[in-house]
Length: 426
Image (cartoon, rainbow, N blue to C red; front, side, top):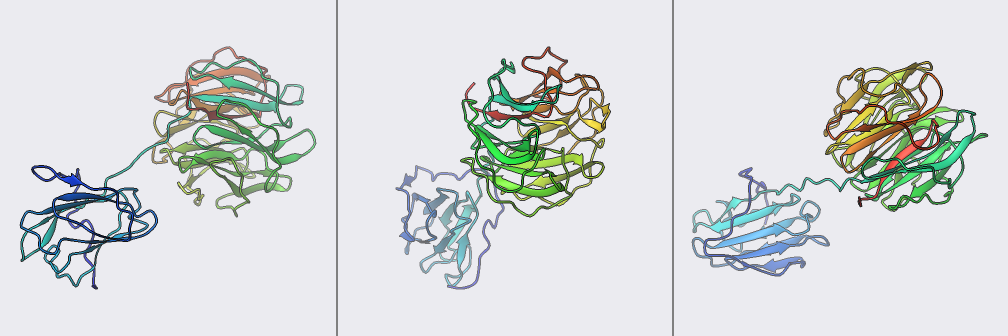
């Protein structure tokens, strides 16, 4: 057969209706060919191969066949319809009829010899889903008021309570870059010790246990941006090297393996921030090049960093960044100069649009703080450096993006630390 008949001709939506009087559903089809029978339904699994479906040779008017994309793989391995000598939607059997849309369902009825088989619907059933959001968070590492570096950590419960210090694991440092991975775990990567910048990393289990140092991959970088993408993977990008600022990135697999560097896209900068939005994509914004900036870069659900977008809001760096709600995020606090701390925020929609400044939000204006999501739809901002001394104050972020007032801090006051969410158990 040759030619082409367009998939989803009607552009219809809804659900595939069963035949009046019922429909007999058959076992899942994994073969490359199958001959179907009238008034039956078939789950077509094309995970390993395409499939040619041969329709009945002598159907009666009103006979019905339903085909469903069992594993949502028709976009990779398509289903081809062989109408077996009959017309298909008024077209002769010399045409090729392909269905190649993920999640598609095809309901066809035989109308007679003139037009043959006619789709009553050939919809693509949407599968828009977001991985379950983590319930807990962890703050770790940082720099004390006396300029010493620490590796201590503090766990955050599913109700936003920060626990007392836990003795540190791994190299004491500040300015690590943090990212989630595997839907319920996290990673602290890179940073700066008292003597050098490092590329090592420490994994965080889904019970909040920080593992020993893992030998680093790629350039030693401090304070880039980290976020989750694709539902279960992570990325760290941008940051400061010994030679200056960079825009390289490293992908993190869903088992926590850091990949080799990818040549950067977008303006090289440090002290930036990143977050996941929409469940499987991300955004990186603000920071410092050789000046404070507000540019942003979107990250696709396959971990590709896009080119610069014109920034929104006040230029700044050293913000706290957290998710909240469902697929939403927020940048909050930060500094516009080395001595000018601010208490503003910018929300990020579930399609990655940064909103205008919300000024004078609750909480102490500060920079060098950290933030992470908790309780599946809220956030916690804590620690950092106000205009005065280093603090351990915290601010809880509600699931509507409203920041609460200062709460007396728990744990050692420090700045330049990192935070990441973990665990799907409350």
